[in-house]
Amino acid sequence: MLTGSCLCGACTFTVTAPAQGASVCHCTQCRKMSGYAWSSAWVEESAIAIAGPVRWYDASVRAKRGFCPDCGAFLFWKAHDETTMSFALGALDGPTGLRIEKHIFTADKGDYYDIPADLPQRP
Image (cartoon, rainbow, N blue to C red; front, side, top):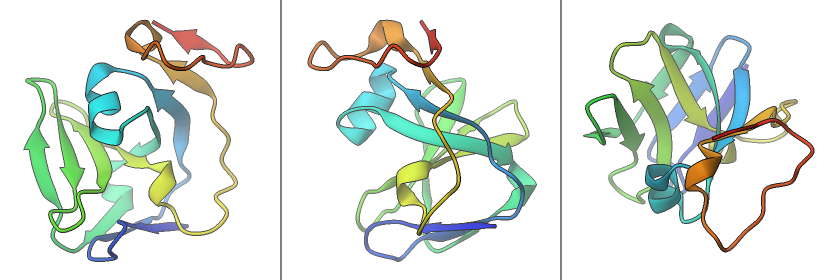
């Protein structure tokens, strides 16, 4: 089980299933939301219990993003047509036991950083 929260603590979440697909997303939206890149993992939506005032933003026709309306922390990503939900690895409390497996949307990465070559990269 994993627990997490936003910066101010108003939004909390518990993940009750093993997390999958730990990755770093370099897409333009994730860079704009996080200021760099966004690291996340996913589980079935039913395996995440969310408490607090999460606000959802329809970022595209494909997906929405969940964030704390008080401190602005970007916590969740959910495709409209999928049963899974991604959660921010940076919002987790304590050790996670997870390791980044891949980098995604690398074609959109910022020009101000390099991606380590030791993991798969998907443009």
